[in-house]
Length: 300
Ligand SMILES: [Zn+2]
Ligand SMILES: [Zn+2]
Picture 1 (cartoon, rainbow, N blue to C red):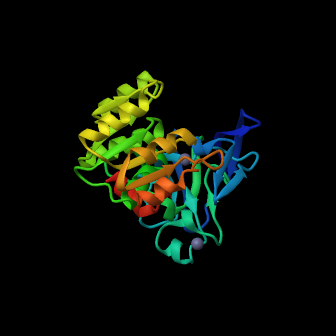
Picture 2 (cartoon, protein in one colour; picture 1 turned 90 degrees about the vertical axis):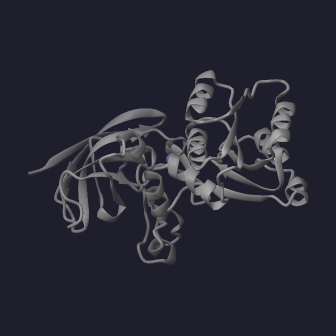
Picture 3 (cartoon, rainbow, N blue to C red; picture 1 turned 90 degrees about the horizontal axis):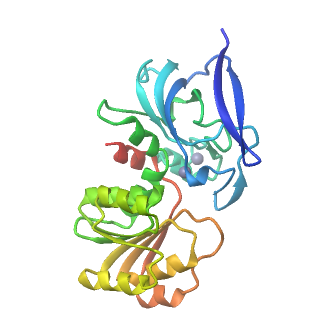
């Protein structure tokens, strides 16, 4: 019997309804009933990944942050009824990074759910079984969906710069990536200072464990960042903005030997001050995606 999946695509900045028939299930694949799907900045109609701008394919159901329940399965370890999160990258399956469970780095054949093929803004989805991450009963649906991008991307960046208990993190905004970084840092036992103009986001940042909140619209912002830095130097900065001024403030705030995580890049070059990077011997990394093991670590 033919089944249907109902979803939405982003078409010319409008939401377009999609009705997709499901005919049979290939070996090694599963069909999920989706329970949560979140919006992400990198899920816009035009996305940037693989290092360059690439438009989402027309007519593709959007959304790459999702979780659901197995409806049908051809995979022995994924029984009907199992709750799962979804890893949104499908690689070639054979190269070094795919074998290391980080298909987001695959340069042979990379497909992203919600961009190249149907994603999670739908009633269901058909995916390879190996992108499904079984969930324990105590993992909330909302957290499981957010681990499909923003939480895991923030975790990957902070893990790779070695953020640890007692470090001081400067989180430059409290959007989905920034709040993810704040929650992870607070969980690790790091001190967190946040720069954020929006009152509601400031309040959420505080609830997640940020100690110091600075208003980005404050005319004395740079002096106030420096003042907080005198009480404890900033070891790590997390900057998910695409803004040159934000990047410069992060570089200036960091202690010598500090580390900057850049995520959410969008509109071209945002760093011109290479002198500060060299003179302070800073480490800069980019975080655009994550491995399956990093997603698993977030879910646990
Ligand atoms: Zn995303
Ligand atoms: Zn590969």
